[in-house]
Image 1 (tube, rainbow, N blue to C red):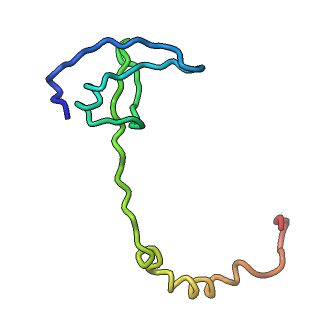
Image 2: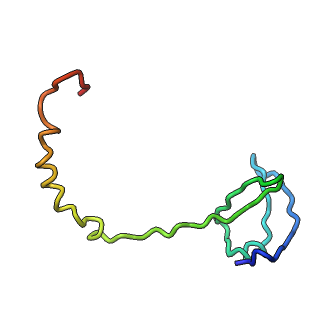
Length: 96
């Protein structure tokens, strides 16, 4: 990662590609910021300047099937206990 004190500047030209405006990011910037093709950037305008910040990806934990099913053995009992709330005739103007 680049030190926040170190400043590196390069010029880039905005061009048209299809219907979009495209700006090229020099490979040196990508390498310094540990970015690659497909990386996401957050764009903002601060004090009249365009600021592009890398979006940090949250690492999502992968769960095993047993972890996902933990506690599901109680679902049948809960369904039995609350069946009265799901069954029966309409008692008012509810839509069925």
